[in-house]
Length: 126
Image 1 (cartoon, rainbow, N blue to C red):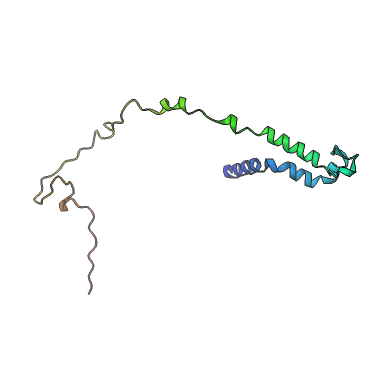
Image 2 (cartoon, rainbow, N blue to C red):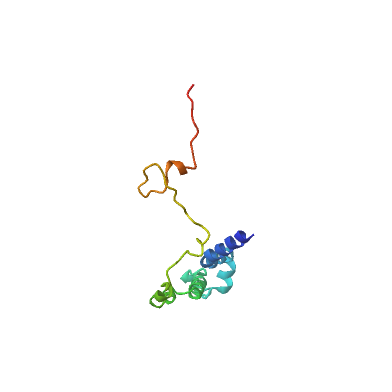
């Protein structure tokens, strides 16, 4: 349901600039005969374009300007600096890791063949 509503809202926002053109196409006869400013002067051959241009200006003026919506980032730089380092002492309080002495050479490497968990299955050919 939420996705359906969000798709509807996105679709409405995307089609908002096109709505005056759709209104002009659907109500062409009414706009030419009643709303056109140049209906008394047929030699101009306006056919309601004056009304359409006014409606398009209204839609473009109601949308937010790109130049006014710039964000000044210089004031936000200090907000993301972390004062303390992250410590995980609280997560590791009950966990201890004991290294057992091994017969095999490990050279400070913690994983030896004795502590291996996964052993692949044996495959017999015959």
